[in-house]
Length: 147
View 1 (tube, rainbow, N blue to C red):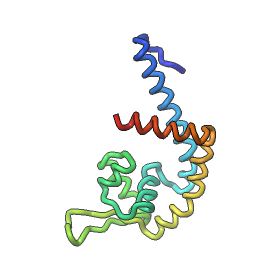
View 2 (cartoon, one colour):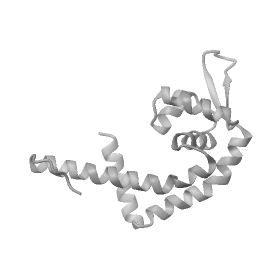
View 3 (cartoon, rainbow, N blue to C red):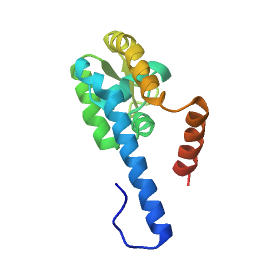
């Protein structure tokens, strides 16, 4: 559904692009992340353990930046993952003010179990676009995100 805003052509075009981008991103996210409930994980929790799996130990602020969440939200996400035994906090010996978040063996097992299905879901969702269109989408999103 296009915008009902009665502004200039430039305003309507931008609003319609924003509406379509938002709807497409939300729709794709819902489809791709539907399987997370099987593991009792939120999107943010999965983002954290997936980042730790691929990048190794990170500080909470680094994790927040990687998964585009606030540092306040990150504390809650890490607390909940720690309660489940999927991550643990490690205070650094060289600087006691700094804490690294480390993926536990159980966290690694969960990521390795769920990642193939998750990747398959991403591929299935994006298969509606050709490879060329996917590459073009990457360029456009990067351009929009860096302005």
